[in-house]
Length: 334
Image 1 (cartoon, rainbow, N blue to C red):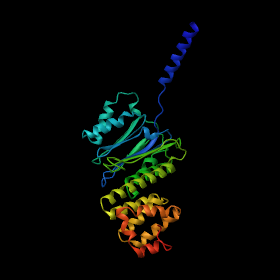
Image 2 (tube, rainbow, N blue to C red):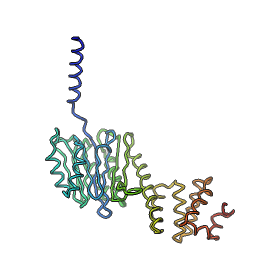
Image 3 (cartoon, rainbow, N blue to C red):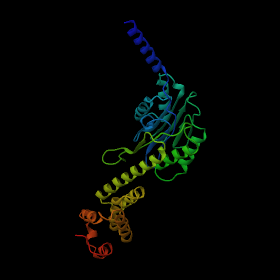
């Protein structure tokens, strides 16, 4: 009995010691930003930490975006979003969540916020794991801890502002730039990107324009780029179908061209663009796209053609004998 009691006491002491150990910091570099032209807001983050996307990025369309890290209080994310929804600005929210934080280690936290009106606020606690710091621009905040130095957020800001195109591309460029100058001093493991826009996501009633995560990978940036290409290809494919349904073929073609740009080896994307090229009057481009589609999947081309041309919007192609002679010199498939 004494031996049993001794064992219980030892286990209790050991478990108590384990519980008292400080949690590892979410050592990372991130950027929060808004695109004032589109209303998109988002967060991109990378770290030598497993599944950083499950902790750092928070965002809500027409509300704001938040990154919470270092000696992290994960509750900052939802609390900040809730306060932004109530109408507080990013600086006001930052002041409130810090004042309300009663957990140990507040002076080691790091958080950045951007609101839907373009206000930006950030905090790096004096005891955040070194090197730690943040930098801001008009529409963004870049920050990190356990970094090689200040050059990381500085390079991120420069890359963000120098990159053309949509917010997701600017966020990715910033993340890559931070890594290129040293990034997380411990190395690489995970990365994440979250971009929101009201009804901007795929399908119906979806505000998540981009949400991709690389949880555990020795080269998370290459994998994040692959996932981003897929995500954007699907987004533009979705926009293509919505524009077709609305009868706006010019808009559908433009979206389809972007889908092909992000998925150049997609047989279906080239087929779709070929039909849309024809419908807007560019028969030369249409024949070129049909040729690309056939080269990608010669065994399925005729079958897919017959299925697609039955679609009401695409039926005019089937009535153009001169065009069909160029497309099918050996005869139209039956």
